[in-house]
Image 1: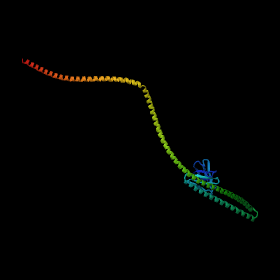
Image 2: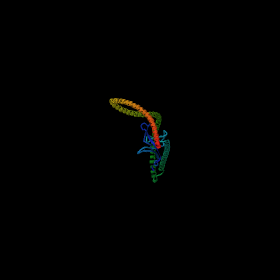
Image 3: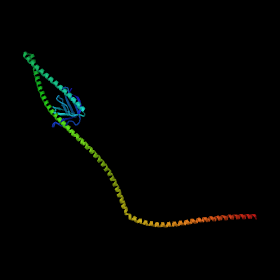
Length: 343
């Protein structure tokens, strides 16, 4: 059936700097998929992560490995076969906790698989040794024949299996020693990493203080920028005012030019003004004469009106006398008519 994924998450992948063994080197530019795989045929567990076409984690889990949480969102483990230390940065503490719990489960499963494998090897070795001893006794007790030949053949096979088992045990002892040495190196690297964590914490504290100072500086700069903006607005207003004044100045200069042009004809205007003044004085004299004549005419008119009123009175008296004489004439005529009638 091959390998099957049993747990998957996303995280930022780091590896310890191989030169300093203290600093982390990013293995991915962004969060990538990190998965636990179980190999059914080999009964083994691996952590695998791929960034595009590049394999950035291929770590087989062994019982000697330990996953350590170094912060609320960061954890690490050492891989002696890869001769490095892997670090994972998660987006939340909950994801880190789930990954650590799964690491512990897989580590325990790897330990059980190793124990079962050792038990099988020990059982096979003991069985091979017992078969070899029994085969030797049978050779001593029995004579030559087909059964003895068959036992010799089985005994040779068991000897070969025992030799191979001994060689495997030796190989496993060497590998175990190698793993112990790698574990010691990784323990040292882990201690160095812990010291680096403390140093990073101090650096983080310093960075935090520096960040606060920079924020205060940014606030001051923003306030200064606000003042600069206000000054810019004032400068803009002043520029507009200057432009208006310059426009007014040009208009005044135009007016001044016109006045200068007009000043050139002032002598002519003054001569004309003097001529007009003389004519005005003559007109005033003529006007005075006319006023005297008007006053004389008014006096004559008043005298004429007085004479007219006097004439009207005399005319009225005359008419009244004339009316009386006409009445006397009429009476006289009537008297003559009556005398004529009487005669």
